[in-house]
Image 1: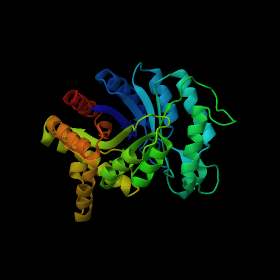
Image 2: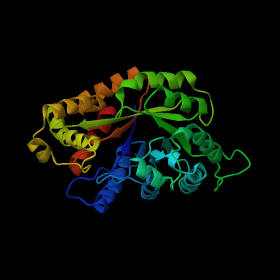
Image 3: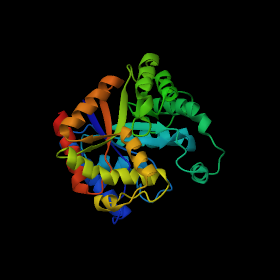
Image 4: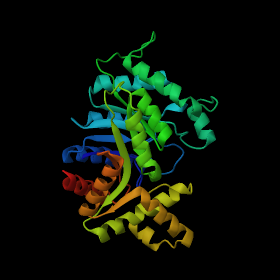
Length: 322
């Protein structure tokens, strides 16, 4: 099984954005030492506690302080930007760190309409232009067409499209690029999306289908320990979905929080997006999903308050699945 990390850079309460960024670099170096294959960064805007707003910059920062691990975006909000400019940034990274750049792009607006408009410099909503922009981006990074993006690297960076259903899977397949399914957002469409991608794939940038799945995972010493750690992630996700404080609360705060029946039900509903348990359970659940999706390549998200516990969770996962 192939393992990577997708980092939203969720900021724990009581910690600054600067401290969160520094610990992210530390975690990426630790992940490389553990043997993780890749470290990807999300793009979020308009939040109080999600520090990853410029994945291209974080990719450069991590690549500059590591030696082997691939770095990527999960993903750049392509509808809001110039495909040419995105291509130039990716090619610049590829020139600096050949063979280590993995570009994941998606069609999220990045926030509410005002934030979307600011990201797009006031241009009208271009969400429907995503397939065309994806085609243009692919052409630019491959050096196709009359206008070439620079620098002209020997090989193009790898390109992936992120998605939550069959339509996004079909789009990636038709372009001949990689596909990343967001189980951590919408788990119900995983099996159908992966099947659609495999069946419709046409060779392009990749000669064969390359699919990954992103999922929340909390791996404890035992099931009880994992459940205790996950309480902070449970409350964090509940707050994020309500548009409230997106900093990660402590386990103590989560345990002391009085939740309504509706909130408790929502937490249990969100657990479908997660794998929580001891190393054996995590391995069993990942293997089950791998068989269901016919995908053995995973991007893991772990948003815990305690940094050492976060490190330990990633360590347990890698040791168990090596």
